[in-house]
Image 1 (cartoon, rainbow, N blue to C red):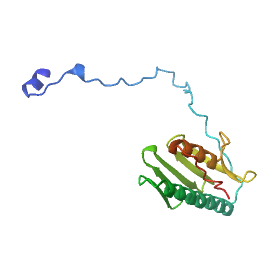
Image 2 (image 1 turned 120 degrees about the horizontal axis):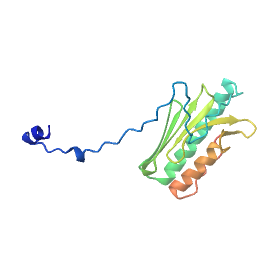
Image 3 (image 1 turned 135 degrees about the vertical axis):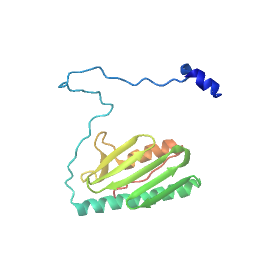
Image 4 (image 1 turned 45 degrees about the vertical axis):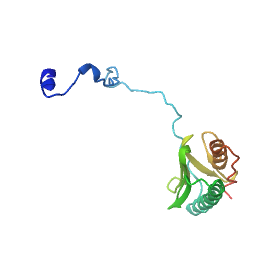
Length: 165
């Protein structure tokens, strides 16, 4: 085959084509169960006690407050690469080279979801006793996480305030 490729003017070498070997699992009995180590804990299912009306009120308030705080921040920074958009329950904060945050309402779960370029995805539940949207795995509020990450990324103190009120 190499000779025929050489006649066509094509230079090829099997040795220069390096394909990764697929990872193969060892053969196991049919009834054996596979287990794999998890890099993150399994998802926690929180059954929200919030009524749909209360969820909508709390999440709309949080999203509106967050939108205003982030718009003020972007205006203050004056960087044309930074932009905030809010449409249909999805808030997008573009920070140029620092990445993009996406924060959105999840009415079926009564949650607010965050996708962070630094910490990844998180799901926030509303805790009435704290009046805050809190990530159940680490107990940190949405406001605290954004304040910390944005302050680090922008090299200046950021306070999005308490987005729940």
